[in-house]
Length: 312
Ligand code: CP
Ligand code: NVA
Image: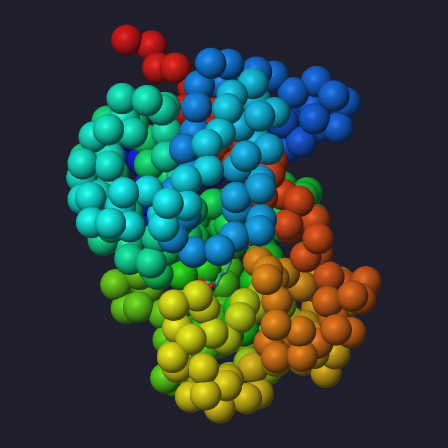
């Protein structure tokens, strides 16, 4: 099957994840020595964002610049999209100017629509279904801490069955990492994503387990991962969600149940005191700041792969 030009789901790059992580590690090392290569010279990445962003926007812009390219931030409200120009027409026009689009959308269907009508790569910069670039950075962070070995390690997810968990289920299954996800009964991951992850897991040998009991997920885990209880777009459900997530906080007593060297991940932004305590976030077990930094290195590997000129 021909490879997709786009990165809409982390499953689009499932077979290339090991190479992407190796390349991101190299690019991180080269940057530290001030020797980043410039494969994107003369190329432009447009960023269309329908929702706020600190990390994704900044890391994409810096990544494009580091690789010798250029980036162009386009807030969805300032585009004619906000006045009713279609996604398809926007895709057709931008394809004449730029070499790739990173798109943060409310609806995954819009992501697919943009990609369908663009002749250039479209990269999902978060939507309601997935957050693939985040999970490449998460895998890079675990890869660093476990010296390149996913097999035999287990990640525990404590929280919402959301976009980040969906990409994490698929990404973990692709690289052979075991994942146990604890979500409230009312907020499980989507069944079609779970079954796609189980399909990848059968090939890689990873174990994907779902539970509603945080203590059960965390027992003996090598890393813990949490995310906000109320994602962007879910604000109307805030009260119901805060009730449903009681008992799902990553705090010192939950962390104690994990393996002695376990570390903690959070994609950020965090709601301190809700899904995670200050003590854990600011403590020695947090890998969160390395994880945030790794957005940059991971995205450089992705941009190099997806945006560099193709041989005709
Ligand atoms: N983790 C993440 O995507 O952060 P931003 O929303 O700040 O981009
Ligand atoms: N699940 C969160 C991730 C933010 C980076 C959201 O969608 O708001």
